Image (cartoon, rainbow, N blue to C red; front, side):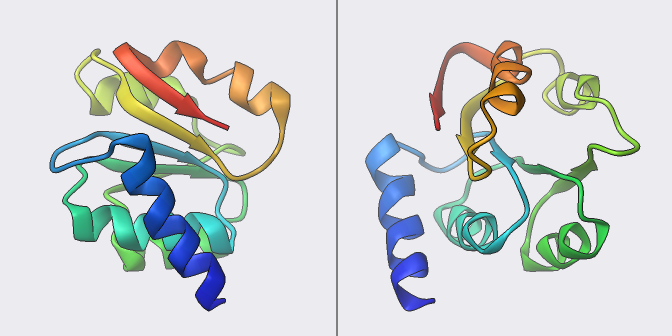
Amino acid sequence: MFITLKETASFLFNIGTTLNSSLLILGSGPVAMGLVYFSKLIGCFPVIVIGRNLRTLEYIKKLGADYIINTKTDKFEKIKEITEGKGVNFIIDTTGDKEFVLNTINLLSENGKIAP
């Protein structure tokens, strides 16, 4: 668990997240939880997490995620609303699901980065 926490913190710095970077995290498992925790310490806003397990999504909200989106009931367009049409600066995939990543690429801001 400590390795996961160390790696998630390091990863966020390596991809260039800073204060007020908008972040979309795909998945709601332990790696996503670590990313949420450290992204909030860095000052990322908004931090949005997409997943399908409502129980873990609710826990991630308590860890500091600004928004959670349940793929079973919500649509990705909600992200455009949250970012006022600008998209997010960073997308980080924790699922390994290629199709999931491909379905979210259009949610990046003009100079956004995706980190699969």
